[in-house]
Amino acid sequence: MAIALADILDQRQVALQLRSRRRPSAIREIVSLFEKTGSVARPAGFLAQVLAREEAGSALAENGVALPHARTELVDQITLAIGRSHAGIPWNDQGERARLIFLLAVPQRLVNNYLVLIGTLARVTRDQQQRDALFAVATPAEFIAILREAGSF
Image 1 (spheres, rainbow, N blue to C red):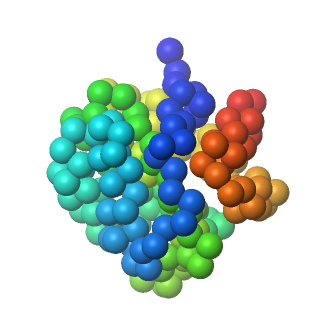
Image 2: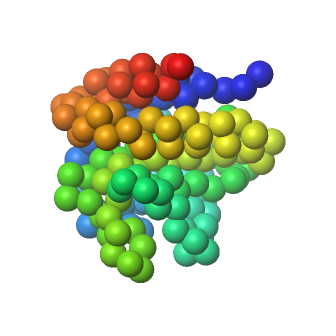
């Protein structure tokens, strides 16, 4: 059975005011959300995997949205943590900035579900009105509510 975006949203794994100003530290800050909830075994190992994956090729999508991930055996289910930066974080060599960062931990056996989720996130964040709404909210619960509603069709 396919997984839905709503299935992996957890407001404890949403940081609406990232303090980091560089890609590696932003990823580290978002991975720390996994550490707090215990959803990733060995967060330091996962961090190393994500950073290595990013060095191989940046996961910056369009419109200031980054979708870093790692396929890993450190999770049993797909897990998502989200960071938001109003100023944006330089994400690639061209200086493009990521303002919304959706970090996914993906078990190898669920790669097809991962592709469905990436498609949903891309569709939701491609819409300017949705992105504006995600920047306007003040709480993780409101942020999650927008994603649930937008990702449900």
